[in-house]
Amino acid sequence: MTRIRVTASRSYDVLIQPGLLDRAGEELRAVLPGARTAAVAADETVSALYGARLAASLEAAGFRTVSFSFPAGEGSKNLTTYAALLDFLGRNGLGRSDALVALGGGVTGDLAGFAAATYQRGMAFCQVPASLLAAVDSSVGGKTGIDLPTGKNQAGCFYQPSLVLCDPALLSSLPEREYRGGCAEVIKYGVLFDEAFFASLEETPVRDQLAAVIARCVALKRDTVAADEFDRGCRALLNLGHTLGHAVEKVSAYAVSHGEAVAIGMAVLARAAEKRGIAGAGTARRIEALLTRYGLPTATDLPREALAAAALRDKKNHGGRLDLILPESVGRCRIQPIPPEEFGDWLTDGGVV
Ligand code: GLY
Image (cartoon, rainbow, N blue to C red; front, side, top):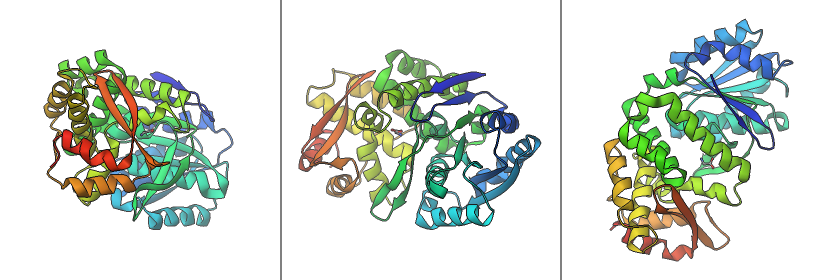
């Protein structure tokens, strides 16, 4: 089993091992010896696949379990589901020392994490990622939240889990599109921090080295969170591809998935960075080629004006500036603040019309 210790305002382990789902109860019991009840939050699809196995493991470790499920998809990451989850916790008599377990992808982890952070001012929280994106990124680092009509993740807080239990075997049931989307986040880590890791993704498909890929991404994220838990500095690097990506998701009314949108965001900004002499020659081509190999898009025909307007409404437009994350080479990126009104020009340089 791989054990990665994350050091933050609450320190915790990320455990990675095939088959871990059936040992979730004993691992959670070791971390939360006094908890009586574990509430499991999962979308209906993931609940049907893995809910019973997780509940059986938790019950074998002495937890009373209750289950909250909701329709799958980004559309559930809203105030209505959040309120329903808080209400569910209250009606089932959970207390602060009980546990909320998020079984699922990024939507479930963000939503349940925000509920755990705010229910009785904070209850114990455990993440069991069931998507590649959640395994390599969103389950680690304590970002929680929900979407508002004005944009993604507009309400939320930092709240670290007590434990992350990653069973790579859960990811084998992923729909192909969701797997590909997770690969965009994996590629992101290579572009940001690790040329050798990027090269390994060029040589060996992610699914053929899944546990090792998850461990490498989690270790890179651990280092970033340890340096800047509250996202005031270098953690912004993890937004590579996300400023434009969130805009693509929003303008497409979420027809473009998160991972696809991040891929587009990385490719467009890499082309723009190369055109402006920030990225070395060939950087954009290499990033595009790997994204394409994983079946991900590298361009969009959504209108530039609408994308720029959506990006400027995004929360990363703060203090009168927009922080762009730009590759200098594969494995090295910079944070470049720009006046928000110039973002449209960057999109033009990246090939968005
Ligand atoms: N997913 C980006 C971050 O955790 O900062």
